[in-house]
Every structure is written in C-alpha cells, then in structure tokens.
Length: 303
Image: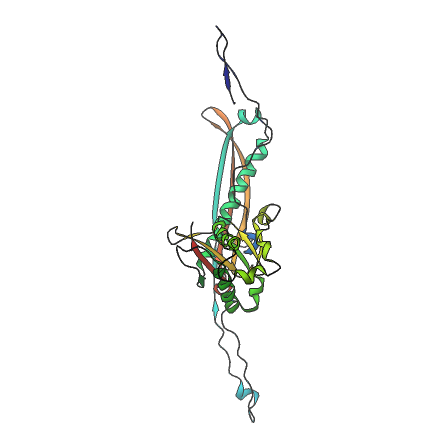
C-alpha cells in the first residue's frame, strides 16, 4: 500500500514511500474515428474561413427530334451552387507541474505532459467533427427505440438513393450502444432480416475487433459489406435521449479545415515562489457539412 506507516513498540511511526514505476498509464481517451470519414484540408492562407462550393444541379441532356438543329434543341441548364463554409477557431489546453516533482520522478514527465495535451486536443477535435453526424436531413430510427438491423439497412437504401454511386464507399459510424443493440439482435437469432443476414459470408465479421491504434481500434468489422466504426464521440440527440450515428461517404459529406493541429509549447515560470513548468497546447480548425445528400443520420435510443 502506498505510503504505509509502520510503528513498533515504543517507537515513533515512520513512512516508507512506495517506489514509482517509470511507465505512466495514460488517461482514458476514445479512439479517433473522424480521420476515417472527414475530408482533412490544410489552410495556409490569410483568414479563418474557407468556402467549399458545390454544384446542386446537373446538366440535362436533350434528344434531337427530326428536323431539329443543335441550337433549337439545346435547353441550357441553370447551374446552382451552394457554398458550405468552414470557420476555424482556436482550441487550447494547458498543464502545469513543479520542476521538483518532474526532476524527482521516475517517469519522463518532459515527454508525458506534451503527449497528454496532444491526446486531449485530438479527442476534442474528434468530438467536434463527430457532432455533425446527427445533423443530416435524411434520418432513420426513432427516438427512444433501440437501433436495429432494419435501421442500418434502411440507411443504406436511403443513401444509395441520394448519394448514387458514391454510396458504395460509405461507412457506418455508430455509438457502442447502437452496435450493442444490433449485436443483441444477431445473438438472439431472431428478428426481421436475421435469417438472410446470417447466411452472408461477412456476417460474423461484425464481431471482429480491429487491432492497432487510432481509427483501427475503432473498427468493428463489416455489415452488409460496409465497414463499421464505433465511438462514444457521436453526438447526443433529442436532449440526450438518443445517440446520433450515421452512414456517410468518406471525404464527401464532412470536412475539417485546419491551420494547425496539436501545437505544443513549453514555458517556465515562478508560481508562489516555486519554480514550475507549464505546457500550452492549441489547435485551430473548423468542421463543416459539405453535402447533405452524402450522409444519413441514425438516431436511436441512448441506452
């Protein structure tokens, strides 16, 4: 037990401090998943905003009738643009530790403190990007109702209709509760669509756990031939009654614009007559929905 106090007959109690291990166990953080689906755009120009213009109409093709000329048959299409705009803001974090505690510790705090700040900034960025997952106009699911296989199938059908061919590149990004709801249905072997699903060669891959770090550790396998990623960073919806996961096309539905990510600086200072080291960290970025047709929000019960 740390800092145990021992005393013998007629002796004064004394304290034996427990030795510290040189390896520090990191704080609990969620695996990042936004790099899987967000278009990452570096911005090295003046200003803090960037427009991502998008054509919302398609040119129509006319068929020439007998006796028509090319000029007579040509009906120009008026091109309409929308201008989604990402506006960046600075996110900051800082930690402070006394030089005495750093120099007297077994752990390498000179490396651990910047690493901890980097993890904090990365998780905040992931939360900010994932917050857009619940905001697509096209949605499936019902508030207060568990996520189902039918919800996921319906999302795919809907995305295939709105995103056309690009829907074949889509990924699911779901809360662990949503995945757990679907796993419960699969494990029971009952419910709509289960018989057809279990006959698929990729059925059991839903239970596969991806190895590695970062986005790979969030990978759960494939369902309906679509990669499935899980994260607790998906937004709460309907006043925290629901989770807002999504099926979306990577690089086409959401973008992250950034000037810098994970800039870490060290400053030495005197605090209450004690020498201390402070690490400052910052990122500058903004997220934006690029194309509402390239995503379907999956809104289902929180628990």
